[in-house]
Length: 300
Image 1 (cartoon, helix red, strand yellow):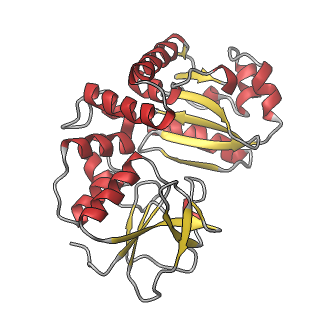
Image 2 (cartoon, one colour):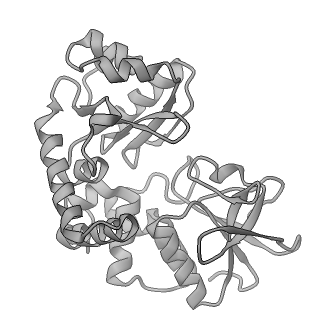
Image 3 (tube, helix red, strand yellow):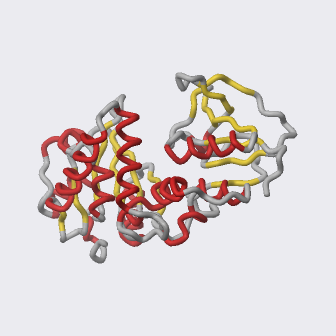
């Protein structure tokens, strides 16, 4: 059981983090969101927070002050100049859930760890949320006890519809279409379905890849021109090769081989290559990726 005097500091908002906030509210436990320069953190800035905020109804951060003597629990974040009494996380080596396999997704997920601290049994919906956050591809393939893949699809699609303004039917159709494209474009030579051009990727690609159960490597262009390459749904050795290849080129890399995902931030000059190259030969893969997927033993 957690000390009732603790304050929880929460990282980037997603469905799991929203559920954690609701659980803390139900237990009347103090919590705030990590922030950098008074802006709520994103996944990229969550471990470099310099303060905390509470969120207005519109989602804007309102600065707060944490008492210097108050014990803290960090949930998927870290703060400069403050130490946590306890950490709840599964993103980095040493985190309680870092290397938990799919069958132990409740212990691995941050939501499951919070529920355990509060000595609270998960609801059916919390089972789905925990599995989806910790190991989405495995959950869709039926590898998480107590998680029905069809119920998971409905929950995930409903969330995407709510956040995007799309209809539920449109989202489900988009996920199934993306899954079909992932299967069609699977490259058996390197064990990936490759989507190198961010302007030519299915709308619901990441979700469709998880539903299809195939490793996907794709690129996403963010506001401001930042380009990121991601690999999801792959085995640990596949993820490790991806991360090592990008690190060797001096790129900022993140990921967790045990949970099957990784990403790397690419220089802006890769935009031109991304827009015009076609993945097929090893030479073209080299041009697109900056490394050859099969320069080491086969992927997957």
